[in-house]
Length: 251
Image (cartoon, rainbow, N blue to C red; front, side, top):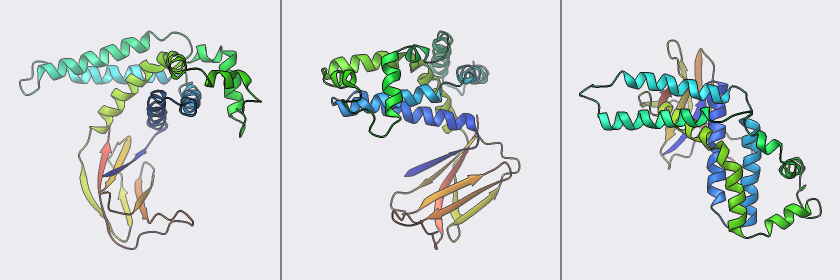
């Protein structure tokens, strides 16, 4: 299955963007080449920008506390595994404590690093990080993979409590709701959202289905237009019925 996620508010949109950036950074930091490690730095700079919202940390802490209180209701419930419940509560409490331990403005230690900020400003210019622009960065790229990785992890590590917190919130969000099977007649689907207080919708199609959902929504209606991928021209709308699964996610 290929799953497409569409957030209904800026808060969830920010968490999804950060999740994607963290995934890229963690994947490429384990690689050996200087080009892969350059991607980690670019992802780190983007994480710094996206996570710079002053209320992001408190938003996550408050949401985790809300989820903790919801789980506490299931204490001593014979239908709920006490071990699984305790594990979930422990994970939430550890994540909240780690974020509370993050002092000052998120990523300020990076902003105080003139060398990194020099690379960040040059990286915004097309082709701006060539060796003649940044000879010290060129030198760093010629260090051993382990030396580069150690530095990258040191710069990434202070962000890890955020990654842990948003991972828990997004996991709980994605596991909420109930999957429903739908059919878009002639490639078009519309649903009125009266009474549905969702924060994200997930649309899943089986991989052989060569259609891509273009999703738009407001508080009144959800519209999905399935198109046939065309990488040279504007993608035309599907002319056949398209079967898909849909899940509304709500915390």
